[in-house]
Image (tube, rainbow, N blue to C red; front, side, top):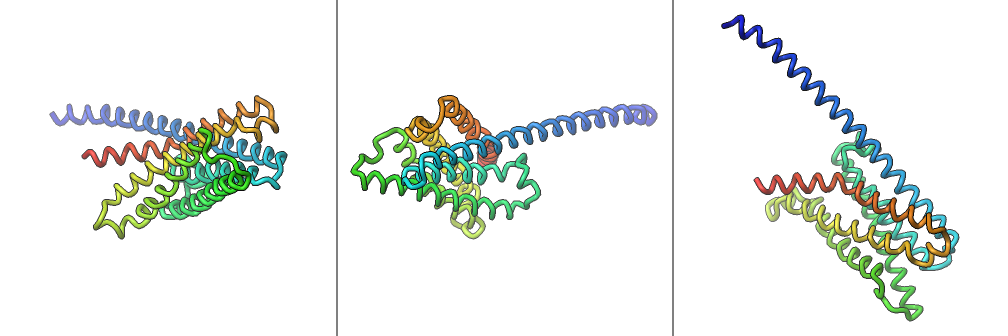
Length: 244
């Protein structure tokens, strides 16, 4: 009997070794794929922001509307997107940061990003008021307003998530964090939808070619999807935890 057991052990051990090697190879490929898509995501973010900044320069920064376009794009398309992906395991520039450092950087980026969005929207409201134009008369402006409402909600429950340990007696940390993820996702998606709708505005149509607008549409949609991969995984895991 002992001889039979000892004869089986090498075979079992070898199978485990093969399985571990296979798993390691799969993890390697997965990490490489994550890295490729993450690099692609950052590239598309950069291209859209640089391209739109150039269009804003052509349109003239002496106009309030130009600042509305520039600030909301920087707020949503650059800073909010970067603030979201920095927690993702495949994000290159934050891989070596600890979770507490990532949280600090996230807050700094998102506060600046939210500030850009609020100022950008406020400038457009002021501009329309000063020129006696109708407020929130287009799908773009209505979607942007709803996004602003969710931005305020996200900031509020973000404070709850930040101080979750201190508020543990009143609310479970998982609830405050989950609500922050959900409202933040809605805010970001609506903001990006508003940007896509803005590509039909005069500032784009008069200052670039149709292919440029198509490129920005494709890139903005792709950035939205890729930026939310990590958030979707986190929310899914939290719902699984709550279901237990």
